[in-house]
Amino acid sequence: MTIVNRTSFLFAALALAACGPGGSGTTVDADPAHVIDADPAHLTPMLIPGGGVSTGPVSGSLAVYVIQPGGSTPIAGAQVRIGAADAAAPLTATTDATGLALFMDASLTGPQTITATATGRAAATWIGVTGANTTIPLAPLPNPVQIAKASGTITGWDSLPAPSSFSHYNLAVILSTFTDDVGGPENNITQPTASGTPVNTCLTTAVSADPCAWQLVTRTGQQRHVAVIVDGNTNGTSNDTTDDTYTLIGYAIGPSATLTANQQVTGENLAILPANQLASFQVSFPAAPAGLPTQVAIPMLDLGADGRIPFPLPTITPSKNTIQVIKNSGAYAGSYMVVGLATPSTTKNTPYSTTIAAAATSPATLGAWLPAPTQVTGTGGAYAFTAAAGATLHSASFARADGATIWTVSLLDGSSSFHLPALTPDPLGTGALKLTVTAADVPGFDAAGFTVDELTTGLRRAAGATASITH
Image (cartoon, rainbow, N blue to C red):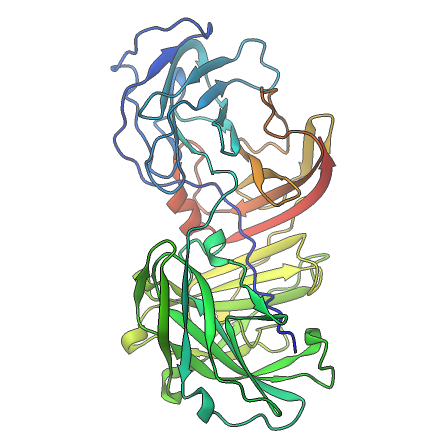
């Protein structure tokens, strides 16, 4: 029997974080070869860890840091271009050892378009920058996720009640707690399989009682490993899991652990929680958005530094909107959040809309869905879409056939069309690409001053759509 893991999260937002000290860098004017002295009294460069915008408005000077994502590590030798795609004389500079390119020129007034590139990293263009200090993170190509491995068993697995009939089976799916960025790639790591079954599972059927020996490819950092244990029903179609239904048996959880890259942990025992450690959780759904009738919700329990426990099975839907979750008390004290996802069907993930209920209590009510962008097009270097009503900002990304994102565009000015500057070498290359447009709703967002943490934690709704293009 093949067990298919359909859990996925579709989030997109800019990566930004809190302000910190910066350094000095090269200053240029409209002549890229003309280096002039910085005027510290005019603008004090300030690096924003994780990326972001601050210190508006732009008036004669602009400080641009280029860094690695998720911190303050500078990228020296990055190319920074200031100017619209069709600018006749854009300002250009190369970042110094601190990751800084400092521009001073009378033409620098009002919103700016900034493009940053570096060898081995995805390009980034921010359109409509209105703050004089900007920090842009560039993701590596490909974007690697540091992983560790764990293996073990579930204490008491063999003592669970046997499946009631040939159409039933006991299934445990072992997961790692999520980071705060629930849509991050570290929370969606592909698991290896054996004979078509993911190895991060334990399975007992009416005719086979194999010992529970799970293996998990997981993220690095502080975390817990959690097993959701269900009674599965094939509904008479043993070779088709799409119509399987699940009834919760319980949860098993391991100790807090901090894993480093390539570490292998063996012999981990997950302890099944007693029934009095479970609680009922109910979710109320809004009306389905147009064209996205399939709605699901996944509650999560935030354990702080240990991460967020997701509760993906049984799946919460409008018709079956209540499940048992781990009670947020004692060793598992924390707050709940609920992530809702609307898609065209169980097998088609785009376009999509997602809505988040933070600090939720049962019964939790999901907010209205954000409509997905429509009419995503890209022809002859011109890209356009119909904006999602109610979105705070939109972004776009270009991905190769292998899934690697090679250029991202952040539209901070509310525009719904854009061109990309001609760069040498061209980050897009030639051939087929996937263009994704994402809409985000972050209450209180201010394009003149924001951080990635604010966008990540403040995100309440998102929606996206894709189109295949040829470049």
